[in-house]
Length: 487
Image (cartoon, rainbow, N blue to C red):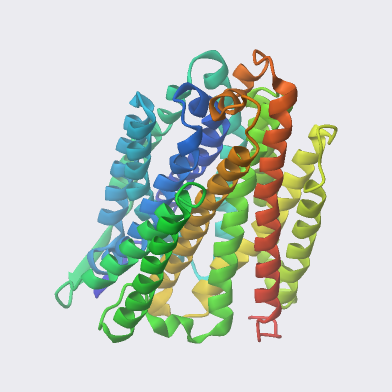
């Protein structure tokens, strides 16, 4: 392990926070811009069959690398690992913008994810390093303004670029931001690292984690086309998970210490953040697709549905500190999850006459609920472990969030493709449905009357799986043994 001495002068602290803010904006605007551009990317690259991989490749490599970077940051220092992540993320953004095919784009997105695996958890870890527990809720809320800003700017810029130029340009936005973050960290973030023992990497832990996640994601992608092969991969993933747990139990310096999970409330925070992140990726990706393909809404306007969610997330996060101090966390979570569940149950019965404004209301309710619950998950997971494990706890929670999005992005994509294929008949082809996904293409397709019900049924199936996820997370929080306000 490394002993670290941070220079905490007021000027340096806020230079660091500026870099962290921009880095958070950089990774969050990635979501709002890509989801806005996704229908156009799918249509232009003929990638409906692989559409979930555009998000899944990014989320998969993020999930695999997050605990590795967390361990390296504890040993080698935050600065060098954070800088490395920013460099790789920026390079991946640039290559994504140059992608001429769906395969190259997926590979470039995977490269972005390798960088994001360092950037995303270390923003929270750096905040925990330089601010006390009492300050942390407000600082996290302040940092969440990056999400709100990205939600406002991302869809507008992304929609403008898609409508006026091409989707390629949406990836170039992060290149100058990455360069700014690198300069600020170089100038303002100084730490003294004294290595007390040789760095020991949990190679077997990394291997079993990678095998588990890759097998699981590929299995999900094959659910609708090769179910038996998917089942075999799920078995491999399960075996790898068992081997990972055994490895972490006996390894001296594990990627994810089992000691953290001795607190049931801590484990519930991780599970809640994981499942809600899966819900999050559902409406972020499929609300814009619903609006563009069925309502012929422009990419810009459809992207604003994600904006409304993120703005409410930002506002709600400022109340987290007060809520934690006054109410039992499980009661907060249960109340908000029930509200989310009611919104999605209504969506299951939505037809073509369902009002467009209702999507924005549902997204705002989602942003409010998740802004409180997931922010609370972050703060409590750091608070419920010893100080020496704060970095690891943050990495585990970030891994959970990435894993939730990774797995569910694949599940949603498999469900969408399967339901579409099951309804193809009378000369209807998958390619014809693909052509309607983008609002640019939707108005020129002759047989929309036959295609629209197919897309609507597929989207209903996607959001039915969201309802199931919310029921699961509701039960998990109901079982939380903690019945006291956490001080």
